[in-house]
Image (tube, rainbow, N blue to C red):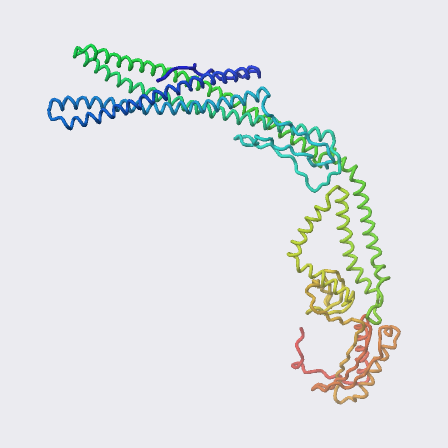
Length: 618
């Protein structure tokens, strides 16, 4: 049933001061012990398989005997024979149940031994792998040295890839190894310093050591799991042996009763046969006692191993955490040495990039100054009289200079910013690509703004109005104070300044375009002479137009149209005067003032409307 072929497992308990050689020797002893135990388990499995076959055959045999005895019982009618046969059947059933339970336990034990063999083979493989790593025989990943290249300040040249079979960050409680800084939009123009290259190499080495330490933790956990499986299987075998011993005790009682019964009959052959069966049961019980003792000793050895692994786990995990901290520190140091905020990198960047950036800034500032002081002169030199007669070309030039000067300033400033980025080492293609995507998004969200700029450009090109023109846009009437590509500013007679987006300008009424016309509607009483009134109004208008102060603003002589309308309050005399837009209000007010004074001198009545009929003032 059980034959002890191997000694209990050797202890695997490391000391806190254990050297590398001692650790290797201890691991070799454990592997040899496990191999010897594996050989013993293989032989034990063969014996248990044979024992299970014998027990199974015994179960079949006893089941056949019970079937035959029950068949005979049905054919017997003698009460004494029936009672005797029933007693034999009861004894046979007891033995049958006992043998069947023994067969089940033998099957369980065979399965457990097979599981032990598989688990032990896995554990030996894991221990060999750990031993190879301790001896340096394993397939260790090589450290990939970062190449020395022209890498910009603030960027890490290479990122050490994860090695095959190493899974960073899978051990509970251990953070992942920080990855190298990815390259951004900075072009590779500045060479790395020896300190940066060495820091990256050290970071790569520390990262590799951390990954190897983590792999050691994983291997350790695999060893611990395999040992736990062995413990579970050994406990199962111990339980099976204990149950088998209890059943063997029942069999011992049965054989003892058979021996006593044979002695009472006095048949020496039966006595010898019963004694032989009893001796076999006693031998089986002794073997079960030995097996139980062996299992208990084995479990004690396994418990010591597990306790040793518990103690070692803290050391392995602590070492892995220490390696990770060292890797994180080395990575931070490498990133800091390559950071653009590092004082040495700031100085290098300033020495390499500073002159170009300053040169670009000087050029941009010079261009902005030139635009500010020359755009108006250039506009005045290029702008002619255009379509308007007697127009002031300077006003037109100032209008264009105000609008396009601002646009030119923005364009120069934007180009200057991109050139400074270029001088600073930024990849303009990448920035422009992102700006293009951003521009498309802004265009969808700022359609009204784009419409304002487009309409403003059309207004300036078509010369719809210019500075100081009197215009009406919508319900707002005022003089144009400023014109840009986006907005137009109007100042009304009350002094309010209205900012109107160019995109909202649907129509413009320009009262100052080329020339302006003063329309005089003078109401006089019906009792006055129409010819005299017409003559006096025309005379006053001619006098004003002839004066040195006003004659430059008069385009054509005054034109008397005569009596234009009869109303219930008097007749209306209409007179027209064509003047320059800039003199419109000045000449109109002066002529009205003099007409009032002349009518007062001549006694010409200007009738007043009934207050009830006058429109209300607003």
